[in-house]
Image (tube, rainbow, N blue to C red):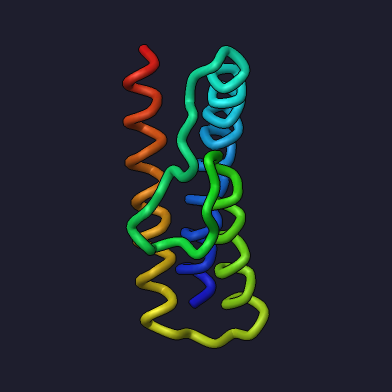
Length: 100
């Protein structure tokens, strides 16, 4: 289980810098009158609702920390975390591509 948790943590580290950079760009866009949306994800994978990436990444990190703390392995929770990480990776990559 420790190896799995380490891989999840590695994903969080990879996403962190991308999320910070994307949120900075979103702040700039909103300042210039663009980006008037309410939520990045609406498919129900996340419980948080935000127009920035970091709250979604934080939610995922909290779930991973809870698994590590409790040492309780729940397949449904793990599947949700993996889907969240995949969604974050995909969306941040698409965002980066659009900005080029």
